[in-house]
Length: 328
Image (cartoon, rainbow, N blue to C red):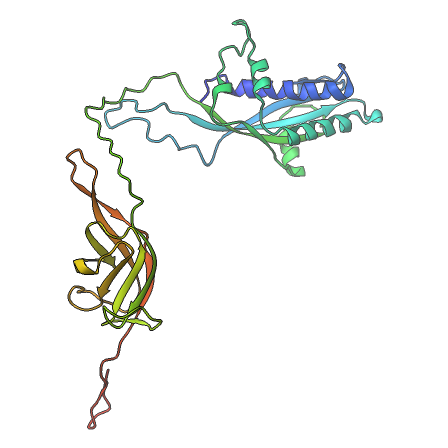
């Protein structure tokens, strides 16, 4: 996070970055400034002007809530901001200086879209008398990224109209995102941990690989449809545990102990043990208990959920000769 000097630090660091690029290409006479466009010089230069600050749409409420019901500060409130910059270029038109400077500016912004740590350090300065001394933008977790912002002719006309009697200069716009600003308030310290309970248990948990069925408990699975009366084969690994049970379509079912193995669980699709068997798409999940110690008791551990289709099964067809009713 950053203190209140973050905005000015971004502006100065950007100026330093562009100033170095301009002087490398066009000599020491071409500089980058940071002032209002109506106060910019007429010589060969590039001017940086922060004309708008808006809340960052995706992170503006990421820190809520910052206080509890009693009004005590839980965490530092922070403002997430986007900085809108207007980069204008000046120079001798007959020598195409504005266009050459603009090319250097666009190239620099495209090749180095993130503020470098060196530019931020140079902008802050080493002496307490420096205006940005004490800025902690360099310690922020989020890097400031510059993104070009296209401006239509109407947008540029409205933007330049706010500068009274100022001639238009060739310009491009960029957005710097995201800049966090937070106060120096210290939140209340959390309550101390009275007891610690850390347990390490070598277990990967249950995992289901496939769901098939067979006509009986002793028969191997086949490719027939899964219908009531058949035996459901839940195959996978680490399926056997304490109090192993299945979640079948939202209903918890406990299979017979003899049918539960580490790599397979068999369950007869009948009532009982299932009381709410419904045709259609459903899912099966393996659940068993694990005791992590510390007196907390057993905790349920679930596998992945595997869907399967339970087809309807016709057991009889009754046709009443004296009527047109057909009962399935």
